[in-house]
Image (tube, rainbow, N blue to C red):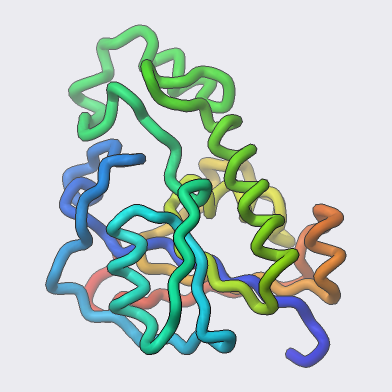
Length: 199
């Protein structure tokens, strides 16, 4: 659409830890090899995103001939001592149950709360908006849920947003300054990039 400011958010392709339903916030593991994806074009030949391997590998698989700018502030929430563990392994832990009830304020041991994750993601997001026209951001489920909660035209809570791996979200505003003023976008669309599965 002419005369608009567009931002594309892409969630990385799945890893084995994702398939095993483990918490892998800052765990740096690769994507699963055998996934077929659509190819996207980066208008500015530049994509920005998390510095973790799964995001860098997603860029290499989905885009051709682009430069990738890494920014650790686009990482998933750090789950600290709960990294690589599952719900079943943690469900008897009192602190874990408290975190499930209030993840915005309660942090995992040696990890971060959702509020801490949201603060750094929003800072990185606004920096990208200031510097790049039609930014494409490759990141994780938590950051995308937060950005949709804040900017999508439909109001939903953090956990109400379903954000499958390998999905692309395009948000459009009339002007760049509307984004920087924290206004919700005027249009929103979703595209599944994986051709052989949706997990």
